[in-house]
Image (cartoon, rainbow, N blue to C red):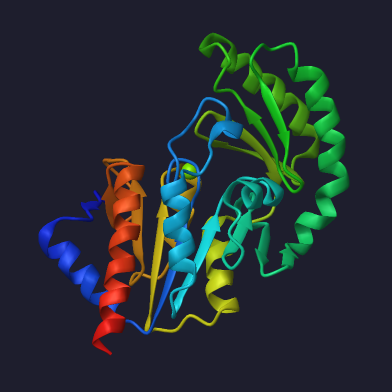
Length: 271
Ligand SMILES: [Mg+2]
């Protein structure tokens, strides 16, 4: 962990621009919530702004650029929110990877599915009495959102959740994110490993530039695991992160995407 540098800082930004224009392929991967859209009280309200969608659509048709979203959301959910065809969607923290009508699901995660569905029923029964809890079955993972739960009740919520999951120790585990607990298959797999898989699937080389932008704990796994030449960007100023750079907010992410588009256009005009 180090202190990330501001992405748009003079020298830093110049060298990144140079790398984007000189690399033969750009892998541009980003998280969704808190990265492309500000965090909302209800996850279902996190609609992709028109401007942001238009930028991603423009990026997706540029030559030599590969665009992907890596999220904790379910595949169904993220594809519905974004609705852009020719980009990659890695859902459920990478347990599922979807590209052009093909979906890959982690084999070990598939095996845990029946158990996960059973736990979902138990959670619905036990957690519903806690006001504000929002349960979401995401196919390969379960989310327990507590954005709207009274802070004094969160501890109780966590205790109940732990009790329910404990008998399945070794098969299921609980992870935490921003105002969410997640029940996931106990498999060593995270956004970082999912991205490494994507880079391999789509043949990234030393000459490719890899960019990943995220805002949360689960994105740190990717910041940490990606090769040191990767441009890792955390949204929101953080004293310590595995990311090399930071931007202040989602507006600056938008600015960054706009910049990549103009760099790529200029590059093409000069060829
Ligand atoms: Mg996020």
